[in-house]
Image (cartoon, rainbow, N blue to C red; front, side, top):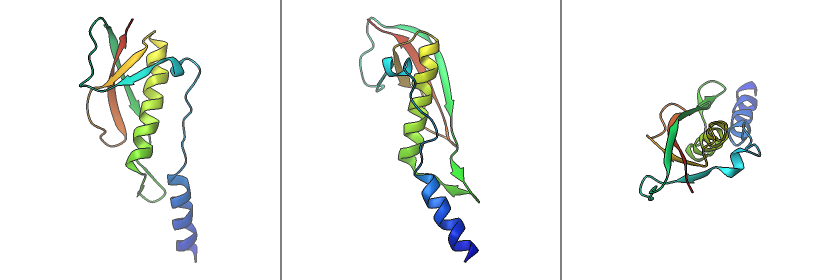
Amino acid sequence: MKLIAISLLSITLSACTWVELNSKGRGVVIRQQTDSIDGCQRIGTVTAKTRASIVAGTSRGDKKIAEELSILARNEAATLNANTIVANNNISDGQQSFIAYSCP
């Protein structure tokens, strides 16, 4: 019974988003590596990290992890006065880096 309760809690928590997009982060857009960034000035790099697993190593969904990393990166890029981010690598163990740009 205890194992079932832990399993249900794990499934429920894995669907939760732990981070929220702040007002400044809303002004930052995400572009793909294949998108043109002509006219943009590179500001720096931001690294976002979130939990890849919860309760007893239960893995969180890839989509949810990617969503949280994007939100965290947008919030952080805004503190650098960037308005655009581009993923710099693939997600690995709940972490991903992004290049931050200021675009017209």
